[in-house]
Structures are given as structure tokens and as C-alpha cells.
Amino acid sequence: MRNIFILALVSCTILIGGCGSKERMDFYEETKSTDLSEVTINTLTLNAKDTQVKEALGELDFTETVEEPPSTYYIYGEDEKFYDLDIRLVDGKAKRYFLAKNIDSDLGDLIGRSEQAVLQAFGDDYYERVDTGTDVIGYFDKPNQINIEFIVNETVTGIILSEIE
Image (cartoon, rainbow, N blue to C red; front, top):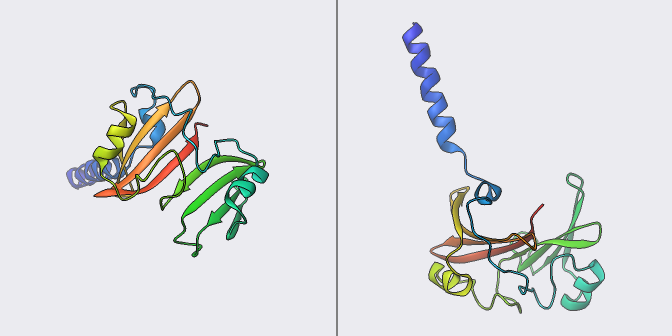
């Protein structure tokens, strides 16, 4: 009976340990910095004010408010669930952009392109991780506290530009 219990405990430990996906900050120390200070989304940078966002992108299509952590999401696109762009605002400032479709940005037309196109655009100082079964390529700009991640499913399907918190 004791051997079965120990075997079950070891099996559960291995199973639980193997299921966890690493967070982006798990790669922070080992990943060299890449300058991301010039990356913009339709002239907008991180920390753009909500009024600047509306001025640059026009009236938003949907809004979502979250209590924890306190944030507001501006959503652009025809569908609230399958949108073109969502912007996370905290205290009226943009802290994260999530692009699901190509829009006017310094990121060019990377959505729909290969992983190789990302590496050509941003260089070799990146990390790779898996998040909920999806491959992610990311870069850190340590001096400017910026992170960019490319969601890759054969081609780039999304881009997240965010402040490192």
C-alpha cells in the first residue's frame, strides 16, 4: 500500500510539474535586451493617454472594464471576441496593445508572416515559450521596460506590446 502511495505521489508531482507553462518574466534575466523604444501602434506608444488613443484610432467599438487588476479595455473590430486590436488602459494610460490583425504600426505586416520574418525584424536576442499550447517568441527592452511577444501558430497570429510591470 505504501509503495502505491509513493508511486502515485511521484506520478502526480511529475504530471503537475510538466503541465506548467513558463511566464514571460521567467526569461527576463537570461534574455538580452532589444531596443523596442521606436515601436508604435498607429503613432501610439505605451503610456499614451486614453484621449490620444481615441484621437489616433477613432471611436472604439467595444469597452470592457475589469475590477482586478483595475483596467479598461478599448476594443477595435467588428466582433467583441474576434477583434483587430485591444488596448489595456490603467489609470487612463495604455499599458498593453494586443494586435490580432495588421493595422498601421511599426510592426509592419508581421501578422500572417513566418517566425523567420519576426527574427529578421527584431534580431536574435529573443526567448521562446509555450502558453496554453501556443508558441510565443518574445523580446525585452530592459532600459525602457517594454516587452513584445509574437503568438505563432505556423504564422504570426497575434502581437502583444506591453509595459514590463
